[in-house]
Image (tube, rainbow over all chains, first blue to last red):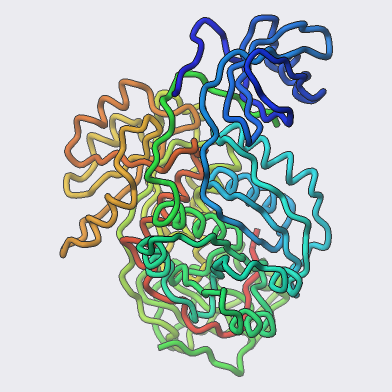
Length: 268
Length: 268
């Protein structure tokens, strides 16, 4: 069911940790309250759409607006929670803005879990998980998702492979030309009755080290894939691979919900 | 034929306007000379790989290196010119860095022509074509392309449609849910014997105006396509659509040339 209470002026779409049930109230975080009250100048009675990744999406109404805080009264369910493609993205952290970019775009493209991976040629040694999580949350709010991708702890390349679930296909874009065409690999997957969970592993700007390529070659759950004749930057490869997955194997047969005519501004 | 003269230390890959013939010399632009001599500290005898979009790719060697200029002696052809997918991207200019991003990524993804388009909800009124051209050129140098996409003059939405070639399919990602699945549309195309030239039109952040959607709906060369249930930002939609095109209909069956072990640094 897709419907927005038309008499309410909806100011924002927010991810909330709390359980969501009709008639209850929830408190937005201090950041969210600041955004609602100061940036969006929301007042009592204004609408907020919320989701928590478990209970679907709800129309709320602002109550008890004060200088720095407010309460959200949960009025009506707009969408029930639905299952989404089970697709991981493991990626070598890039220069700061490019890592942010990968997180934002991967969220729009429906990734369920993001895992920073340190490879031999990765030239970043730290990632701030809270920052990545904030970017993923905002992207999920913006793109109308009902969930926020989980951000995994950063791991070393070897640990990633040791801990990789056996039943999850790991697709690795490979510039050496050793991979099969991504389209062919995905179409085989899509034709099977049971679609296994998938993940992509995207290397750093400098590519994988020879020992890393050897390690990948020895694992039964790894399939190397090609992304054409041009050498893509790491962030381009991530987006391109995820897009093709969703178009061929994932959920792009679905349509966006009815465009109800309101836009949500970026919080950052 | 893919071969690099192994005794030459290759410092850069550059797009050059001049004709390229064996034994001739060409002069790099002042910017290129600065990059070679100051940034890369190239000296006489160092190698440079060049292409011009017409004559394939050539190994050159630096001669007459002075403080601010040098000459490139054209030694040996590395690749002959090959045809590339005929794929246009018309896009509403975005905030500055996002426009740059679209240009860079579209070049990596093999677009042949880029056309800035002013729509009703476009909130940028100027684009600097020389800047866009410089970004496209550098991306082509980096991604190993043999051509640089042409940058068309910026046009109004109505003019774009009036001048659009009848035989070129215009695919328009559409958030209203009216489009067919991109995969389905592209697979029908790929199965035809004759692949028509294609283009994508990507609207601005605010989407197309209702009158614009009506205009698109009346044109026989337009096919509206869906990019799944999530609302993609404009730049994400551009990249996602181009990636799927190349994977399903374009040239992603081809592999990168033999990885000859040298990397080129970004010029910017």
